[in-house]
Length: 424
Image 1 (spheres, rainbow, N blue to C red):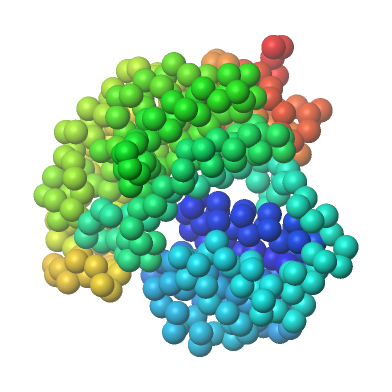
Image 2 (cartoon, rainbow, N blue to C red):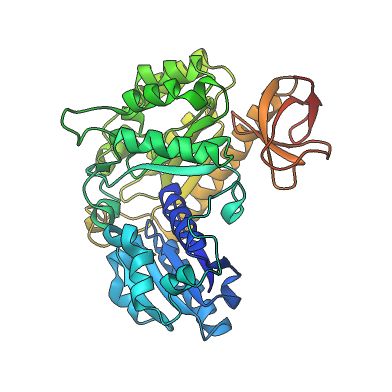
């Protein structure tokens, strides 16, 4: 059986999709483009109306280009609006987020050309090990928890992902060993609310304890793997975590700390549990402790009630901040959230102009960071055909050919997009 997995949205979805691919490959299925696959799994996002639209368009395109394909749809949009998904062409099954761990067995029970049949036919390597390059990814994305109990007024995700559930530490340590043994050298740790890991355990644990345990793992001690911490809410980025990233060789000096806004009035309306002063102290402290760290963020423009003065506070802070990457999201109304009931909306033209200005600021911040790194040296991992590398602080630069994908190299940064191979 030929399969394709199409993924929208966050790293949690990427981790879920990687799990689907592992199970399908182990059962003997082979990867193919969506237009040539017997089975297509579409893993949807619903964080914005644009994400919903993108999923619908993709499903229609697959059905048009490959009418024989069975399309299985899962993810947040499928969980939130299953009736909309069911109305789309060639959708054979809808699997909600809670049932994602059972998605492949569910397919094997209902498909005429089932995964179970492929597995028993001897056509494929049942239980085959994963390896770097699966789904085109050199790093492995490891989901350590799912669900969220926060009450951000604009966000629909708690209703699509449910309450926080953490993956037990023993399971994660075994998974890290398996992934490293398969050849992966970078693991991205992700979760819907990553910073809440362990709070649902009895006795209660914490993300800092998980990171400390991973730091002690044999692969970490032998410098065979680097962990990259995915998006972390500002209130969850403790001093313990910053210290660990600063002093441990096994953590990439890379933080992603969603700000969302720099006006305390807007932050309160968003129900974000911090102030701009708190956020400033946090990122300034990281920059002082780890001068070369990458620090990315997310911001929303056009939130209901955002005034010109509110926006100028955001733009002014970003322009003078130590941030290195900015993801900009025009506010997207999500029915069922508190924010969707609020009035005083800026016009579409105003929101687009604000987004444009923030993107320009983000480009300047990224350029400033790249310029600051010229002359520095880094341990880096080769990507693609080996001529592109990524450093711990998320610089991607070209190097001379001669290396394969997924090799550690030492690189000197010579320009914003070029590196020099160094010995050692």
